[in-house]
Length: 331
Image 1 (cartoon, rainbow, N blue to C red):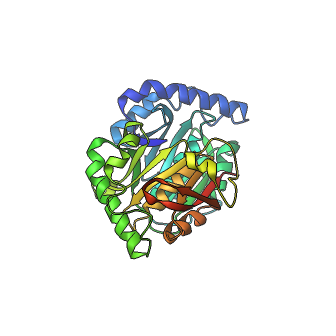
Image 2: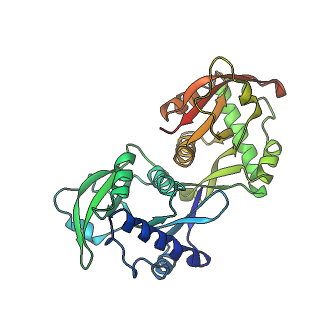
Image 3: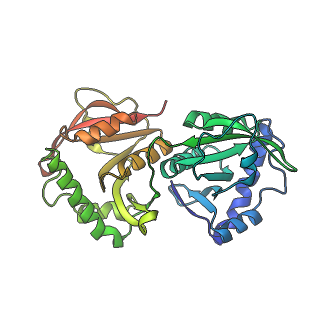
């Protein structure tokens, strides 16, 4: 999945999403949070004009969710029956609506939590689904606010434990290939500095090695919006790795379809690797990855985020040799 700013061409697609969400709320015992007049694509048109509107796209590039971000909500200054957990500047999430069954809601929140150190949101007390998701993801209930004409809303906030960056994700283009070569070289030098001389050899991987992934739509880049959209990471995400069928000294924890992560290279010290893996975890229920035994930073990161070592595989090509394998299985 990807997230980008909403554009006028998205508007005809958004009313059907709102309608499905309204029907879902009614079916789940929440008939009064939204009515037939709010929200609509007309409100989203205002969000576009003010730069506040966002959409989530699935892997096929289809719009499956919509939401708005703001930097202030006056009613939040009148919270009662509790308090916000930080007085720092925040972003507020409004009008989140997603097609059911595609996991867009969890992906959007993972994207927000990776980018913003303080997030506030409110929802109707009967919106049990949203309350459950927020609690599961680490948001804390803070109190109650009242909107004139709409009644009470339950408030939640999220305060990040560390600094965040305005990172985002998109599919790579041919214009990114020179920068990807730089990222590969920097990653190679980082590996050497950490006594990992064997995972990537001089000249491999290069941008030419990922052209097939680019053409297949499997090559991604991460960019930093605070640094003029500087590309700070890259990776390949594919559906299958044949050598994984020959796993030794263990077993994969599931036989369900999976996504495999390859060729991940990032600028160090800016949380890019964590950003990538957290977004993939939020989107896909089953992930697989392998790395050299000497790649201690990757071993630490994978384990920290819930990946489990399951065995090892042997790559015959380019003298790659043995690789330690991990998988992530959503519980």
